[in-house]
Image (cartoon, rainbow, N blue to C red; front, side, top):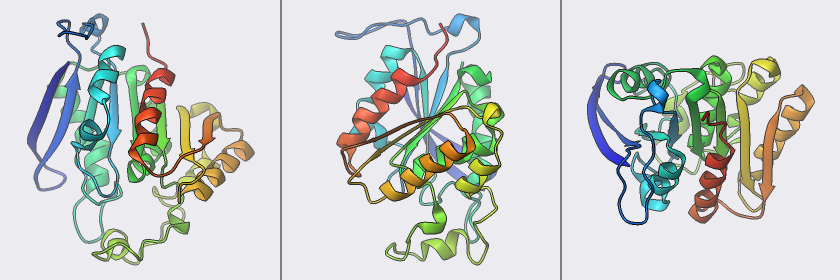
Length: 257
């Protein structure tokens, strides 16, 4: 696996930012297996892997063995930096939704040998990143074959952000409503055509402070006839939980041969 920390200028943000990219390679070291990195000429499949509120683009590598897991699957992994943005165009700040939904995939496609077909494109994330993953999947279902949320923030309307420093809600949304917008995941789920959605995977611990809203997301999916692979299991908001979860996500992804 080739690992790159990439620094670049993002036009949508008006500043430099970073991402970590893992790319499969045929050569392998001790204890690893090389893979066909050509993707049968179409480019390799790619997973956009999103971080949580307190983290950055390096956190998945520092807390899990994502490089080893991805190597075994022959999949590229793109881990972008979005700071504490909730993957939104901030009311007072930067346009992180425009960056993650529009500019980033174009940059990745023009820079790395990854497939650009829907069948080979996936997104996943934890906590705030779980919100980002489902936000991308529900707003742009035509782009992704599958999306996974691990302990995701899935209902902003019921989320208490008062304990977070820096006036987080005011900075991101100000007085703009969430209901009925691109950030209203339950509303988007209710309005979606189930047949048009990517495959969805939800994983949340029963001891997680976000458990109630994850269970609500499952209920709405059932009401709407949305095919959701839901797993509510013992666990909390911890990296032990997510390390196992991301392995299961990679096993679940519908990777083409």
